[in-house]
Image (cartoon, rainbow, N blue to C red):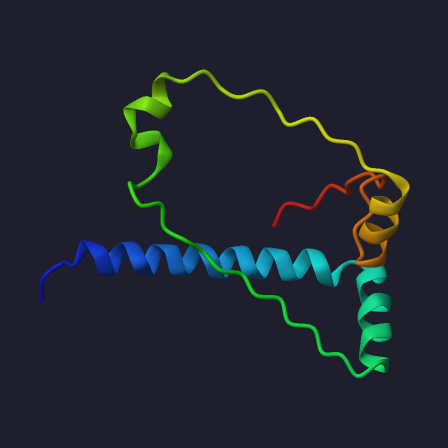
Length: 106
């Protein structure tokens, strides 16, 4: 059986996506606010689905492109969260004002 680099790459991507999905679900599962929001939605007869999708860059990773390597890094984006944004984020279980907890090493 010959080594198929395309299939090997697809399998690596699939494993990375599975790990990402598990991490994301773990973070969501720890949030009491998310549980409350989901319960309110369920009482309204709404089922929520979270879908993670991915797209391949047409020319491969950005690091492999010479133009990207020669370009200086872009400054971080500047943004502000107003009261309406904060209320929405909190309603879906995200509190940007909460300090992050350190996770125990596994």
